[in-house]
Amino acid sequence: MSNSGKLYLVPTPIGNLGDITFRAVEILKSVDLILAEDTRTSGVLLKHYQISTPVQSFHAHNEHKKVQQVMDLLQGGKSIAQISDAGTPGISDPGFLLVREALSVEVEVESLPGATAFVPALIKSGFSCERFIFEGFLPHKKGRQSRINALKDESRTIIFYESPHRLLKTLDQLLEILGDRRISISRELTKKFEETVTGAISHVRQHFAEKTIKGEFVIVLEGAK
Image 1: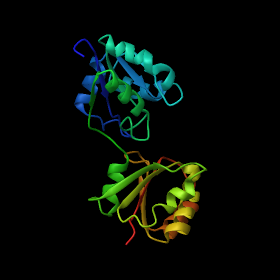
Image 2: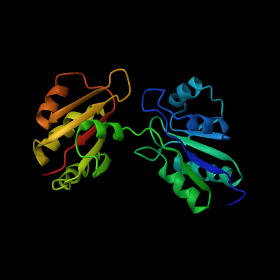
Image 3: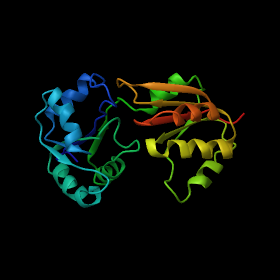
């Protein structure tokens, strides 16, 4: 292990480029290599902070092919930072596979604290933050309804991520299965058109049905009474 490098998991801003820590910038400047989910997206951030470290793509479609190459570099003493397009690697983004493999060969892993979209959405929802569960993205097709059904009696606050083109479908299913309980939906957090709408599911659905749905969405759902 003493001859191995180190793997850093570095959170990046979810929108506003100012939401990155000083240490995150220092790490990205000092490592030998940055693994990015999308090199073009990350290129904007890296250019903004004058980070000239070499960058390679590492995402859901190539991570299984490239993981051994990355392990070889780490075991050879290289320091590597992994970033996603936005937020913290491993939270509904690539990250888990690399961490698991690094730990299996006793490479040191350090995860920096930083931006994660569901945290500000949860806090500004007004729902209980003491106990909550994070469900990430619901299955696109198979298992979607059963996943929601399993949450019927969940008393903790429930958090989902959702894409624009599935938002209304998700709200319809939540309303049908869980009833017209309170919900808070945040979109485009930290960006110019940030918006949070809170109220009964039926009310919030009507709000989004009357406009063009754009952006990344965090759904925060009040737990069962």
